[in-house]
Image (cartoon, rainbow, N blue to C red):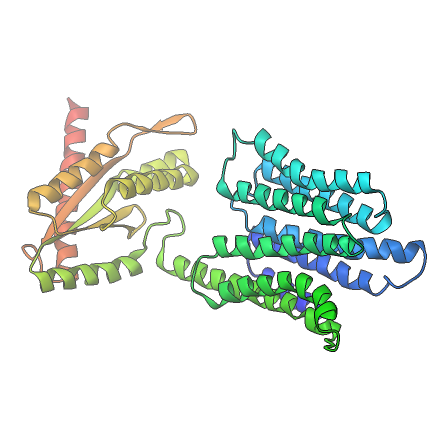
Length: 413
């Protein structure tokens, strides 16, 4: 267990994901559970205390794994819900282990397991009203009803109740992992089915001696699903890191737009489609006017905000089938596939200029940002990417020169 957590921690160190840190905390709780298991057979109060830590740490680990699957876990209501689940499950397991004969206390604790999450959810509906939250409430409500029915019904009621709590927690993990990681990858499959196996342990382990007493399974076998889950989690973290690295390699770190490398790939694909179908496409090269002056007078941090605002405005304006890229310091390029004619491409260019007609408000200051646009049409202005880029660049610099001359003339008059 220590070696597994060490391996998990080494993977976690290479990611900034908050999910990884929550998972690691959950595995540390599993380590506490494993250590407490060594002392549960000690007679007296210390053995009883070890038994409580043993059970509660296993429940807490499962709750932490569930918490990591909630997309809005950073909200205060999610933290309150987690705290309520921690408190109610700890109270229930403690009463179940220490004083199971106090039926009234056990019934109150079972009711709290169901009503506590419902109360938190109802109180926070104005800020978060998501189906996952109601799934949690439904799980807890069903568990509460089951506990009230079985916990005092017969001699095995307490065993059934304790295992029902653990089964619900880890079956919930399987359910929420399936909702969160809806992708056909090894990490998702291994983690989801690992949680399913872990949940079924709490049914099979107490049921097997009653159904097939002649079958003896070593205790280590029942722990295998936990290691399967750990492997699945590590695979998920590695898959996310690979996807993140791939995204960084193909996108601009400041604006999130495709970088020149990805833009060139999409340009080549767009040209190939146009040649194959006999249609036209347009390349727009856009340069910000006097961007160096913004950096020099207001600082590079303002310049970075300007680039982010411009990138967001351009990306929102074009169609999803088109491509907006940051191909230079203050240069953006746009691929418009299948425009009907040059006039349509010109209209798009003018609409992009119009987006920046009004000054941008940044840090209580108004920043005037103008753009110059050059347009090249395939196949009229060029038959390949390089010739189209040269044609669009020349037209963009011509537009920039005319804009500067116009501003200088207005200033002189």
